[in-house]
Amino acid sequence: MPEAASDNPLRFHLVNRPVPDPCIIVIFGATGDLTRRKLIPALYNLAADGNLPSSFAVVCFARREKTSESFREELGEAARKYSRRPLNDELWTRFAADIFYHRSSFDQTEGYTTLRDELNAIDQRLGTRGNRLYYLASSPTEFDIILENLSASGLNQAKPGAWSRIIVEKPFGTDLPSAQRLNDAVSSAFPECDTFRIDHYLGKETAQNIMVLRFANTVFEALWNRRYVDNVQITASEPLGVESRAGYYEHSGALRDMVQNHLLQLLCLTAMEPPIDLGADAVRNEKVKVMQALRPLTGAAVAENVVRAQYTEGFINGHEVPGYRHEPGVAPESMTETYVALRLHIDNWRWAGVPFFMRVGKRLPKSGTEIAIQFRGTPPVLFNRESKLQDPNVLVIRIQPDEGISFRMAAKMPGTMLQLEPVKMDFHYGTSFGKATPEAYERLLLDAMSGDATLFARRDEVEHAWTFIDHIREAWKDSSAPRLDFYPAGSWGPRQADELLSQDHAVWRRL
Image (cartoon, rainbow, N blue to C red; front, side, top):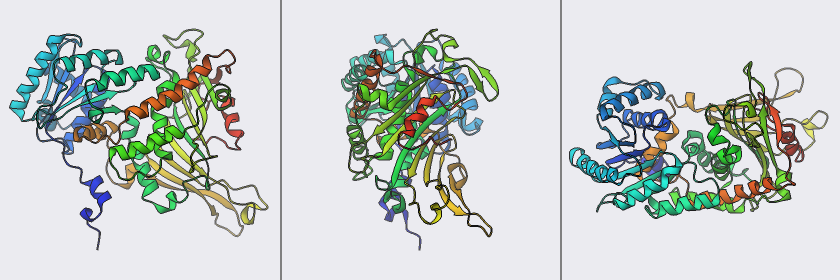
């Protein structure tokens, strides 16, 4: 007889998520792309799946001169374009009726006073019970003034029996001091338990499945350690250049834009110990322990373990593209890295001696993010004695775009000869469960409304990550630091990145 869901605590936790309390989401900077492309489509899809609370509203706070009616029309066009499912006109009309536009500049005190009055009126009309979720979707330069005004107006304080939470969009600072200042500003208005630092990579279905893959499958957990794993590779590649983001990217670069947040978060999920339960702090405690065990890269160690490079002109999908220094808005002699590869070590009992390789780059041949666990090879006997060594077993966790998991193993080819070839067992989320995978922001918004911070970064996680990254950036400023390398657009990066792995008798896995 099949096991009932209620008899299995893990299944109950994952399947029977309670519908969040009635609430209002207030989006600061609501006229930006994030709201149009991600937030409103995500909320619409939550509504279509029946996951929103029965009483719910969105208040869009921005400077531009608009009305609620005109803004609803704009959002409808955006949702029709960016929603993962086709828009149902009747459902959209019902959903959009509870979207309101509130015009004010972020530094205008009166705007927050009138916002408070509007929220109270919505509570009375819709029954949202005083629960507030504030989303900082504006430029990070505006965060401080928004937080100050939320505190000054009392909007950060929850009414008796209600809750008040805040979501902070990345980047969480540009270095450790700025991250600490931002964290101080947030903590002066909201306690850590009500603060949700969002990293959309953690909302992706396969990223969430890493813990299930490891800790719910004995075959993998038993092998997930230094005795059986030869190396781990984490790759994030994209064929796009900087597009219209040169102003931001020139001051960020690949290391701060991707490694500090997305890739280090994936590293932590891959390397962490099993938490004592599925609560937010239990999971995040184990992630922090990985950051604490990560061997610092300073001084000469940076030159030995980090490759930085920049793309030059080349071809992507048969089309010629310019080099980074010829992109609009980029300095002619820019030293900003568009590619970075790192060799990392985690100095704990499970992972001592296992290299973790990480790379991220723009203008690479394919778009994709994956984690590849390469296991140790078999001894040079039997099938390996008189022929070349067989390809090792590799477990690949595809984060995007084709979310899924594959496992490479050796098998005998049909025929009278004993000839081995690698074969692949493949699991695709899109086809295995017969339904579309939710977008990352859908899961993350739902979790924030439910008060579940498991998939959000905690303050100490963010600051440990910046400490690690700042050491590397400081070493790059030294006059003896290795030069910036170059790679043609459409290639898989510079030769030096291949040499980094060859020191450990490894090669990069091709996506």
